Length: 136
Image (cartoon, rainbow, N blue to C red; front, top):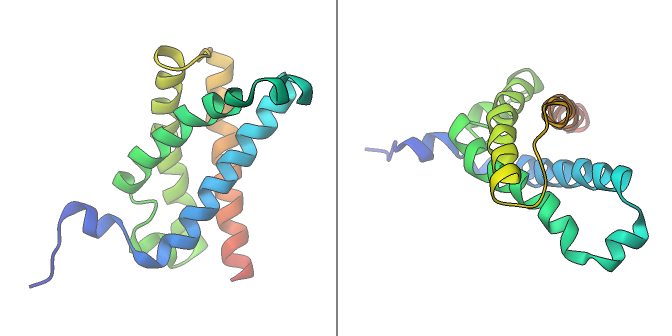
């Protein structure tokens, strides 16, 4: 009998390219955001700053995305199944990231910032996945 534990049904080996792309998409989004609020000189002088920007959202993503099914078998089939899964995964992952940013890491989770992260993260992750399936 096959192992059908919860995580086994949520993780598919074929989703590895999606997971790498998702992480790159999030890092690009967060880097652009940091550059919009800081200059290159500041980032060069404070190398840990970007890690503090990335950490809460990447931790939230790594904890939540597999549980929601961002890397399940359905996520690797078509854009029609993958894009909604990544957006459904991003919303709670972003909430976890915002909470970590507010209470653990340096930064705040102001309502406007939260709205921007929810919307832009959904657009970036959904757009990346749509492009992946178009080019695949």
